[in-house]
Image 1 (cartoon, rainbow, N blue to C red):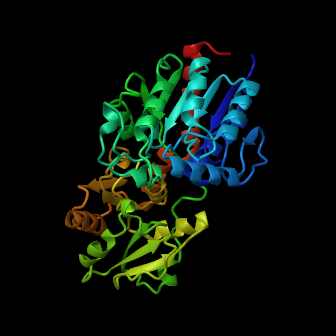
Image 2 (image 1 turned 45 degrees about the vertical axis):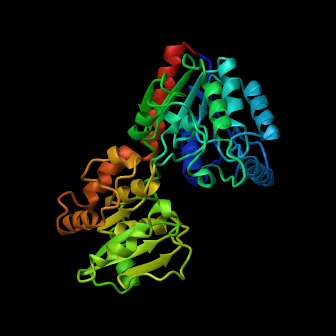
Image 3 (image 1 turned 45 degrees about the horizontal axis):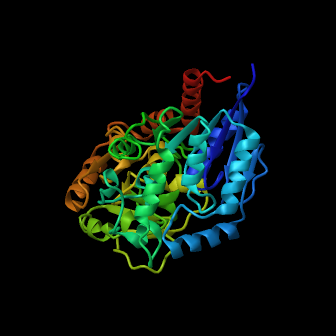
Length: 413
């Protein structure tokens, strides 16, 4: 029996969330005798891993980024990267092409989708964010124009496209819609959270497709419960003091909701509670007295120590699809409490993560206090349950099952 060729495409490889996800799947496929895996990507360092191709330089991607901001067409241009990608697809002759987030200004996404469509190449798409059905933005926020007539007069133009001159969102939406037209028989779509499936089913671009959910996974060897983590000792925190961790590398990004920490901290002024702000690069910001600014953490094992030290971990974002900070926290045994923000809302049992009405800081504080007072599950058990759901091995095996279902449906091999 011949090997089934799987070609994954993403902006990065083994770097950042979707790049690591793609690498985890690729490395698992290399261990499987039935599969012959390949990867195409555009950003980051050049990899020496087997069958991995980087098609453009980082400088080229930066130039394409600037061009997209100038023209307002966010997923267009990229002639060199697109041609190289298509040439590699023709050379490899994959049985299945698996698209993740190829939105790093290295290829023209609608053009590649249209190529796969017109050539009847079986394709699996993982929705990690919203751009496949918005045609533009990764987070549609409160805009619902993508549900029917398409985008125009974008209310968050600069945030959505980076453009400050031209609103070309209508053109981009039309190109994405045209690329997917008639692709239903050869294209399978899964999402990293049920929320994205629900959203896609309401769009005029993807509403004719079938959807499934495969949760993202993380490296449990890095993100697991570290009992003797030493964090309280490092910051001279009493052993009886409760710790609330908040991991956010971009504290001033309004979408991430860091500003809520100021009001939230007031509800704990008279409590034996301390907040640890972890990952923030800007150590000059003024914070409440009960918030310690840890600074940037670049090592996964070190970050796991901070997660493990928390009695509760926070998510304050306005909109997220499947933030890895939640996965990492629960895999380290820490209860997550946060605002409802989309993707995470239905992806976790309440014993792992509980979400409340966005913006209701008092309700958030009360929910945190409830979990600080009583943790029936315990860190070891929570970490064990989380690992069984959100490890990279579980994720990769679920994708292999998806590939096998497609192989059976399409009678490949």
